Length: 509
Image (cartoon, rainbow, N blue to C red; front, side, top):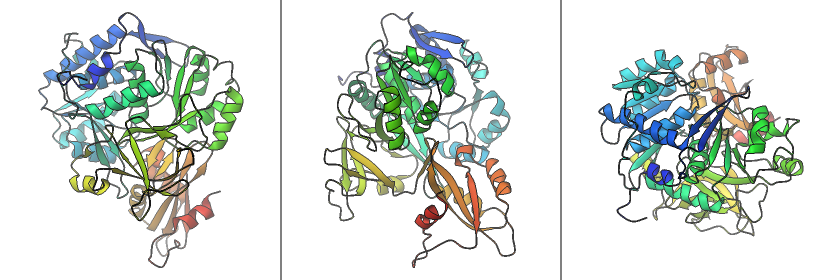
């Protein structure tokens, strides 16, 4: 890219839009068989109106736009408009509750918060408490003050010039201490990854992406959406995953991306067969480990192998199984072009084949650091500039990477990241709870199920259902333990550390 070119991610994505702006870009479908159509011209004009609205609010340079709304085409347009206007997009999981939102807004200090109309009554007081000047609403049925305000603005907007190193988005990823960290991703981080995947996965004009993922994390917002936009490919847009709706529209699609839970549920659907997938060229899985059994069942049913890849909020995609070559069950493939990956042992030396060590990465896709956490940023990077992912893995003899564990004790349930320490902090505050330990146990549908083990204070009887009900009112549903077991004591080693491996063995069934 010439030095004088605009490195704004929107400008790079828009360069891939087809010349025929009247062609369909997004077909939003519902479970009843209805569709709503958006052309490429609609994307350009609507994002321009929204960008003009953002520019009219008098936000400071580099202002964060925090967004917690249900999935809709308009939510994607708001993301594109934020890029166009030169601001920083901050997506928030729709399951987050008031206590969690209070932390994110207080930490990120956004200039604008956009929430669903139904949540406005409790989100606005939180925003005002943190001196956020603007709170707007956006509903999945195109209602709310955001679109009403944008309607008064021009549909012409000159995309703000940005350098590759300028901040484009902040993605919060939970920390083992319970404090979430905001990973700062630049226009260059995201565009480099989008351009690499465009080539590696053979995106082409005429592809049709069946988009069934949420758009508040890397997989749905960046990997899927960027891929389709950059190649000028139509998206069949589902506001939420439903196996029957996927099966209905899959014959018109060529690309599908999902988390392992989605593939398990598709395999459970009687109508999901090779016939409905006859037009498909690529099934991609990520955000959580894909069980080899699911991989094998899928190949037997559909006649294609799922392509599994590996990425993080801090880096977007890092490795991928081969598009043209072999796709190996239980592995996440090879390093992507331009991305360097190494597996390092405790001695600091690179590991050989089948030797387990910590995974470290470098490349143009790797984030610049954590928002307002310079010390944490320094801790996570090596002296020679490689990012310590916190994952543990190994190479096989063919150079394919396998993830064998997570040094940060991360649980991935249904594609969502859950950190035990955060859940433990909520449990330990509850009346009658002396201490707790949270683990992940194998689960066919979710990959891992969040499970808690608690010790009661002397003389107290704890009720599992009451504890779960209390948690449901305080944290996102995907973080709430599926089971809470009450024990007399937690197993510990000589150093006093809870031996979670013994808990997994005991309660894994």
